[in-house]
Image (cartoon, rainbow, N blue to C red; front, side):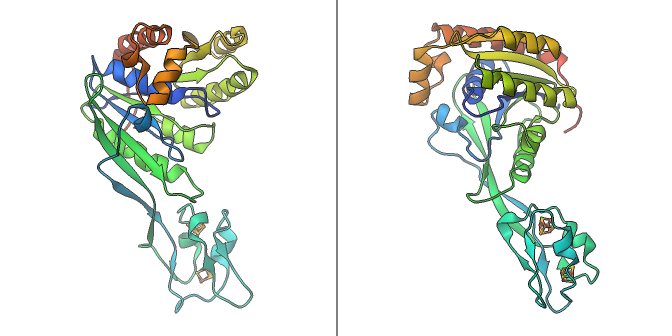
Length: 303
Ligand code: SF4
Ligand code: SF4
């Protein structure tokens, strides 16, 4: 059975998407089988928010890397011309030099080399995925993608971690995906197959700006969107509600600014466990209940 895929995303960093995703995972795992995927590969922190001391089940993320056979290379320069990341550099009269950290593994150089001087077998490790059991709620697995420090390209790591999460979630009811910050290719890759996107925003002009970007992405993916306003009450969220309506999205939650949530966050404890009756926990509980009710109507296109 393929799981329903629900993405939690937030545009710029700091809107509280990981806070929402981890608390939802704890609440929903009491009723449903699920996997939480932390695809914020540059700065994954769901394990910290869940109080885990270490990640388990390490698997390397290996991508293509051009290994050049210099006995065949004529220094024609075709590979450098096609490489749009600047990973291949030619110096006059010399064979190409390859800078590993700039290489995205796209294979364009492999395909254009007229002398078969590039091996299709070359690989390099750009990061790792982990799968860690979490004892909180009813128990679930946390799949985490981690990009190696200094690497330039996040999409290969996101795609690898998403694949592992889909594999680990086989037979579960839900795959909850916590994306990275921003609205680029990595976010689109993380949200692929999502039947529902929970857009976490905050009642600020910057939050409104980023909400539009998320709504655009979700529209492109054909996903239904729910908007959750975090730190509700610190500013005016009427423009957010209007924007959501404009895109056919539903404003489903206002999670109030709550000092108890801030304290729990700092301790690495989900607020829904640390203070179940606090205002933010009650709002998260209502959001989890709505999500549980919608699970049956969310499918997965492919896995
Ligand atoms: S695989 Fe792509 S990014 Fe890497 S060196 Fe070749 S063309 Fe450049
Ligand atoms: S395309 Fe092939 S032959 Fe030409 S410089 Fe690159 S590796 Fe050498």
